[in-house]
Length: 314
Image 1 (cartoon, rainbow, N blue to C red):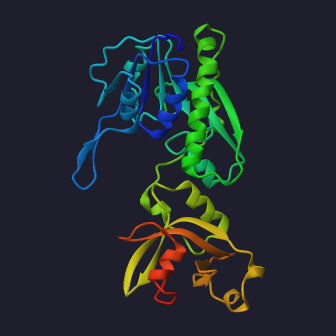
Image 2: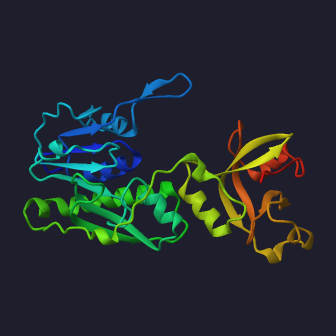
């Protein structure tokens, strides 16, 4: 049985769905706002985002909103999780108890667009979620609640996104009635401790042969599915992108002497899988995708492309 609260939800991503899925176990928003459908695929057919589709499936009222020019709604508070658009100050002021943002980091650490990726890229030992009140600055408002989790160093972006989204929804459910009753005093963030993340672009996914295994491993876990991690190879006199989805470090003692002597950036074959020498280690490329081909494991790749018919482009 859900309790009735006068609030709306803003969200447009998978993270939003993970938060919302847990929130509605206890409280159902009176309206969900999400960004409009975008053209996708070869036919550029308009396709609604995951929040819109989830709301329809759960029979929750949902509205696509392009801008806030005529925001004539009356809610006690709002709940926001990865909405993808800045809420103007005049709209914030319409909410008596403000808009609560579910942010996937321990603010003020990792303000901005990529807190989950940044935690993986930096090899953090812990992360968490923060509930805070939106103001006109980026991830700046006073904090209502936080919850930490430990990281084991093997999390992928998608796994951590889901885990933090679930945690965020649960934390909201534990916190909201105390906040509305005036039992929580919002705590201002210490701006001197703020760390800002930046937007990620496709070039960030390029793997450098002069980086060590730890950097490759973190990048591959943090930057898939977007923007994807890749190297460039020369195959049949053409430069092709080779996307890399997972790697595994090989114990050097298990390798034959002729493999141990190869140069950094050279490929080799080990137990019918594709290997590559990095600056500090030997790795197996477990899953990959050659440009214009389907995703496959390296055994399948070597069935189609013999070792020696391709090389790394430096």
